[in-house]
Image (cartoon, rainbow over all chains, first blue to last red):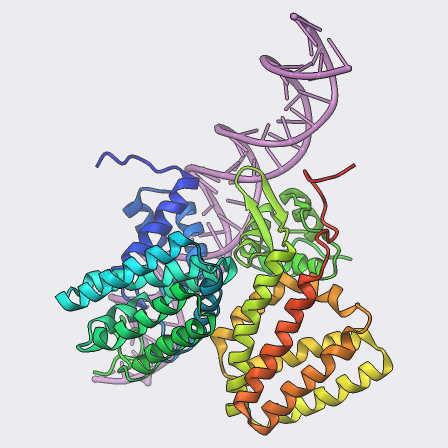
Length: 229
Length: 229
DNA sequence: ATCAACCATATTGTCAACAATCTCGTTGAC
DNA sequence: GTCAACGAGATTGTTGACAATATGGTTGAT
């Protein structure tokens, strides 16, 4: 890849996107140090660009920035993941209610399609497809609601918990549990029943909270101080 | 003021706090340009510090940062303020419910005190005091809930709407309308009735939404393009 | 063997000069 | 009079060198 030198303003985006991607892919463990020069060489940008990208990521809560000590991938405890998910429940139920009232025909058609594909994915045992559809469902409801502020908050919150979401979807029996909940949300939004949509969304995310609460603490963080020999 | 030169790391905080304060005080109008060199002279810091502070403010949604064109105070439309307030309703009702369940004795005592002072402020027609107590009430409920994630989201959202809140509190009859709502929230949290607290918080913030929706569009922005001669 | 002081190195923070770009008033043609 | 091209000044973006600080290992005393 004759990448060459990535110029400043773009470097910021490149580094940000790159770290985000590795974060989601689990290639960067929570607690891992992020050294500016190292990153600048990896992505072929200047240190300034890396610096700015790290600021962005810190503002999003993905990275922890300690003065004079550099950046680390932020460690999100199960406890915090639960709180994040509780906020998601509050905001997604708002979106679901509004989506039921104001979704366009295209949105409703897409929701129906997602529902069918989800059922098929579960029947086929295709977890990856189901997981992708899951994200797409939540996104579609959020966008269809017209609640741009809530949507952007949800994006931020989801970014922080991708790691946990990933682990949850792999639990045996979890898809069988969540599929009917997803279908209930879709049904309510498509038929325009706001109250039912709100309730269904809340019930669904609350069940994620319950699932999270039953999660063991250690999640593969790079331990810096809490190592038990 | 023998201020001297404020050094980098602190300059960032100083500039951030300074702009925030002027923003809240209405000394900086929405749409106003924020020129880096100008700010650096005002606050006695370097341009770098100003730059970083502006990034922070942009991440918080208080400032709009257009590449190659500089920073402006972000214009928040009434429509957006409504959406922000709807999110607040969702998150504050979550906090109220949890606060009812998990507030400590100190929190409950403080809430009672706030209620009494609020009643007195309204009776005295002291709008400033009432406004300050209003903020303190919402803060106290959020903190007492133990929902740190929701609390930090609410902080951010409130920062964006201070201007609107300010205007609302000045409407004749508004305090008389909101006081019983505030007292209902306090009563429910203090007595530990989670469902009532959630309902009361939602009702209150929803009434703010209604009030906002009845707001004329122009809010004193520095018009750059939409000026009507 | 243990511990504290110390030093070399790695890493982040700061700054000022330079480059690139935009803004806006001026000029000139039609 | 209107409009487009131009250019000077203002403003933001970028860079590289330097300063300040933290880190981790080494040394030497006890």
